[in-house]
Amino acid sequence: MEKECLAGQTAMVTGSSSGIGFAIAVTMAKAGANIVVNYHSDEKGAADAIAQITQAGSKAISVQADIAKEEDVLRLFDEARKHFGTIDILVNNAGIQKDAAFIDMTLDEWRKVIDTNLTGQFLCAREAAKEFITHPAKKNVRSSGNIIFISSVHDIIPWAGHANYTTSKGGETMLMKTMAQELAPKSIRVNSIAPGAIKTDINKEVWSDPAQLKTLMDMIPYQRMGEPDDVAKVAVWLASDDADYITGTTIYVDGGMTLFPSFAHGGLS
Image 1 (tube, rainbow, N blue to C red):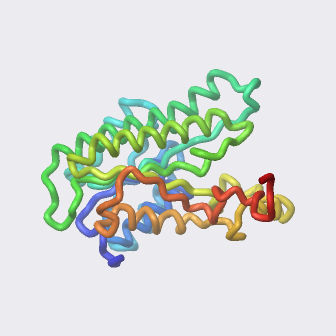
Image 2: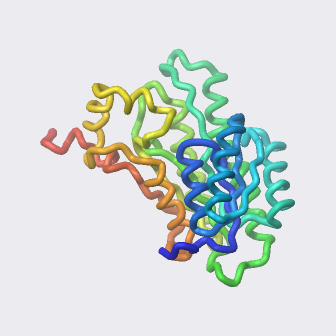
């Protein structure tokens, strides 16, 4: 993959003020893309992302927007057009968790996660697809646009105590596939990346505790936690022309977590 494989393009990365989204925004900038940094409330994190993107030699803006709100999404895209004319890549990364046992889960907890993780992804993807259809094709890019969902291994692995989250991720996968089927004739590619256990601040309590980390390693055949850069590098490749014939696919970046590691040493036959 060439160092400047995204040169001349603009990428919007939702939820890019921290964690995986932050890494994707900076890594895409290093690959030559200008970046629209979206954040919900972490203004300092967004500023840090802008600083690293600028240091990498790319241009960037930050836009506060709650992707669960249609008016915020429309404003986010208006700001992107105002500064860069259009976008070429959408990374649908923003997501939340509000965990509870199923019988204790409130309707508010259910709705907040579905509103952000599924409806918010739909709103951003819909506006990106409209943008890709209307803007003129770039001479140096084969596709008319790229949409990448950042999903989770829990699009296929059930997770007790997280019914709202797993439902949102399973629904996101079918949204991605349906969009890919519908938009492929328009040269728009739509794919997902499904991370496993990635070392971010949100799960620091687990990876900073040796006992919890040891338990986690039992779920990861490759015997290490992922880093945000592991996901970011895949996102850059998936957005590049090197991946031009790939659409409607989920790439699992999980160290083998989806390989049912408990069966590695036997099981019922």
